[in-house]
Image (cartoon, rainbow, N blue to C red; front, side, top):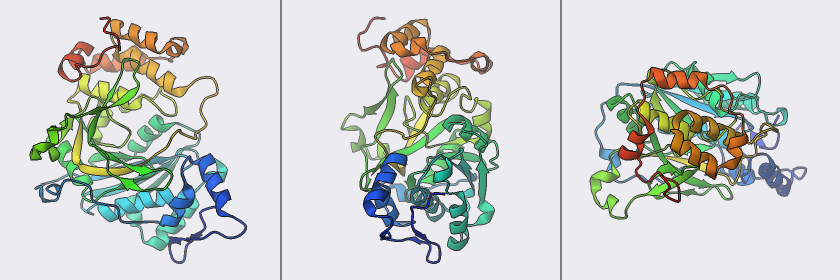
Length: 383
């Protein structure tokens, strides 16, 4: 069990001091090793806090006629107690009850010394969480982010799936723009603006609104607007296209998520799933969008402290699967030219993914380049 959080169940608060047997320096080192963020600061923040409402001032007055409900899916592995509690509290506190169908908590086989489920369940009772909306699931072996999310989503019963990481804090009015956008077009994915929660001091910081993209080696990159774009007020409010998801926080109609092929179950642990899903949504459905009125703060870490397969870099493995399925011959050649390690990776059986592409009658990559991402090309234009 994760005994370091020094949680006072009676007051439902994380204490703002540590005992002499657990000095702050040790707690800090423990957090850096196991979570790669300053867990000492996270603990001292407590189970909930106010965050600045950074959305455009007109967002709060937008009219919505939402008829759908959301299943919030939170997968965690070796997550700190204080960050996960704050994630869940932010959802309960800032999501209207009529839209919150359930929260699914899926423990992807956390290590024994980092288990938090029992403590979460104790907190849930004392804090008065609505137990009818909480569902606790646990993997019997490490599945990795993609498989864990798929298995959790298959247990959901709400109209819309909203995937959230386990160290986020949703902002005021976060869910209405997502549900509304999915209601308008159920064959797309919609993502919030992902604000920065700094890993060293947990300060919530508004980010520049931008798109997600990637280069020919399928490495993610930010795509910024011309500085005049947001001078038009409407552009601060309406959803906009993005070539790629920027991460794994997004909303999608549940039925459509399963029809479009969920996540690639052949991917391991973490990495490239956002690019694979984005290419698939653009080539086989109606694409990927960002709702600028929806904001979610996310703890960004310098690296992920997860144990992974010893024989392969899972990010390279997952990128190779993505490239082999969705890039045409010319771009696949460039992918391997700029990502030499991927050429030596066994990407596994891709039969099911090719069958999915054929069944969905997906458009060719050229359509995506021409209509969505015309700047997608090798650093040296060799095509």
